[in-house]
Amino acid sequence: MSTPVVTVLGTGTMGAGMVRSLRRAGLAVRTWNRDPAKARALADTGAEAFDSPAEAADGAFVVLTMLLDADAVLEVIRQASPAAGTVWLQTSTVGLEGADRTVTAAREGGLVLVDCPVLGTKEPAEKGALVLLASGPEEVRPRLAPVLDALGSKTLWLGEAGAGSRLKMVANAWLFTVTAGVAQSVALARGLGLDPRDFLAAVQGGPLDTPYAHLKAGLMLDGEYPVSFALTGAAKDARLIRAALRTAEVDDRLTAAVLETMEAATDRLPDPGAVDMAAVVVGLTPARR
Ligand code: NAP
Image (cartoon, rainbow, N blue to C red; front, side, top):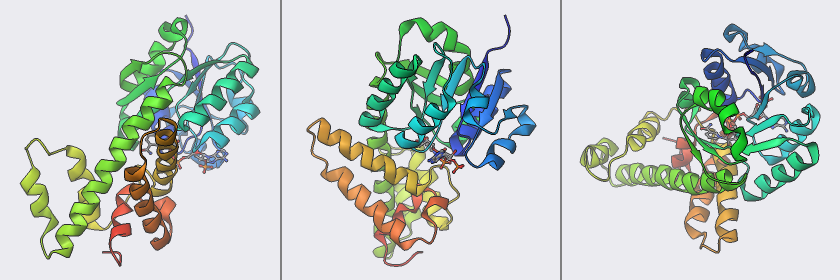
């Protein structure tokens, strides 16, 4: 059997890491990115970069999209126009309404949609250690297995396309609440004249501890925010969660507060797209520390 060709449309932070993982697993990878330099920068992996989504998708067995939002995903898949019957592995975070739009686009284009947002950030993407929230037809699962095994440490199959995007909202609601919670405790410790490290030491190893708190608090303490998940992307996702909460008729006040804090940080930072979401702490403090 010949090696299946996987086309990756979007080689930003996450897409680039996924390309590396797919190549490490020996899969043939064709890439496209709006800024072509980012796709070309992956030449060392053996992935082949193309000038247009359509060229990249030509002859692909699976077309994977990893783009900012639903508008970008729908525009790029329209330009790619993969052959009918191609599996479309949609991994971007697009929210409930965005997922509905991908279902419609797949039906119109004759594509087999697997709605598959991911948990994990830059490093898990690079290491093939994402958690894949897959939803789509039963019959494609064996064919997709080598691709999903290359990308993730775990795949949850959740039912019909769209269920993955719903669970992604649930998981990201938790992620953002934890991140904002860490930011609040770091800022409060500082405001009370304490060393935030003492807060981390107090919870360390106990039931309230999570490695994530140490990871994100470390960035907050350094005041340096190399991007794993850009603040602007996180704010985009917080808006999707707020919409999901409203759809589910669950009060959105908690996520609204997190989003407001992200937006305050965005207003205070010169380039909020170039900092990690740990910079949400800036939204809680009068001046950047
Ligand atoms: P990123 O580094 O900002 O990459 C975004 C990608 O989307 C880039 O390839 C960008 O192209 C492309 N793009 C944006 N607007 C476009 C448009 N109008 N047309 C065509 N391409 C467009 O973001 P990321 O962190 O990789 O995130 C990608 C997706 O994964 C998002 O949906 C995000 O919510 C989700 N996600 C992120 C993480 C994380 O930790 N980073 C984790 C899980 C899920 P250019 O390079 O040309 O700008």
